[in-house]
Length: 352
Ligand code: GDD
Ligand code: MG
View (cartoon, rainbow, N blue to C red):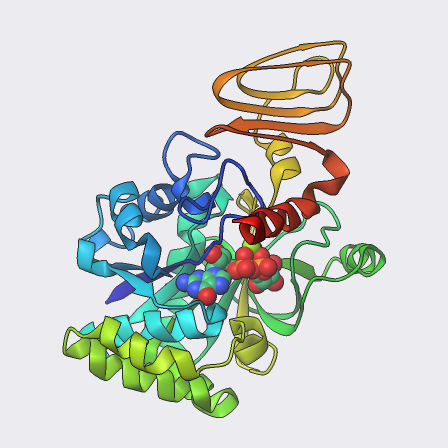
């Protein structure tokens, strides 16, 4: 059968104070009117039924995730006692699928991305599942880049593999993690590079083999967790295995090493929405370039992002600022320092 594993390990730092560790991005209706995790499940409608969708998240967030995604059977939401990065989350998801269906094919998806053109997304996913059922390949979804982003990894594509449902699939030549601006531009110039969306499709046996060849620690983890999951004891399994694991992403553990990777050329709208400035492309701007979300007013202000959750927020003569008002917290930050918001979260945490 066909399954999905949604990774939801967000720590809620970059959209502070709207997002917090108890309410990270995937639980917020940041864009659209449903929590992002619910949108991630809903966009699988007609492809993968909710009972075949698993969410792997932080143990502290299981309850909040159940509330945000009530269409999922509660037992499909699995909490990790500690975060061990995406390779372990994939192994855990693989184990959940394997316990139900040792030959199952599953898509690894993320909880906190924004997508459009859902017909194309669905064709890409079902085409990829088709190929992953029939071939011993690791399928990854690449996104046609629209600008030289330094916030994403890139996939270099090679020869054509096959077209399915109008979606082109190509051999993947290599993966490169987030490049600097100059390198990113040179990638775009070649026309061969796609953004790494962090979405993958493979069968349980093909993933097991690939882990076995490139990352034996993850192969063992997936096998051990499959036994626990088959006994309905996945949480005990995670408690037992996770503390001894190193942190490694699926990109480093597998995708940079394997040579049987096929990339879908994703042409649907996709965005990771990594920080406040990324919201500008998902909301309208006023005549002066301000993005005003919620109850906000401005006079003589330009190019600000103002988000007001539960009271009125007013700016006068301000330029290029992020101003956020949420849950009794106010943030004022120049747009080009949005990456420092994480630092502030750390500072405040240390102060208790
Ligand atoms: N369950 C679980 N546990 N999920 C996790 C964990 C974990 O320990 N760590 C990360 N995730 C989830 C995140 O919630 C997110 O949805 C996804 O896995 C990717 O992790 P990020 O931490 O957001 O990675 P990134 O944005 O720096 O980079 C990756 O994703 C980009 C696309 O969004 C890389 O794969 C890049 O190459 C890629 O372009
Ligand atoms: Mg990310």
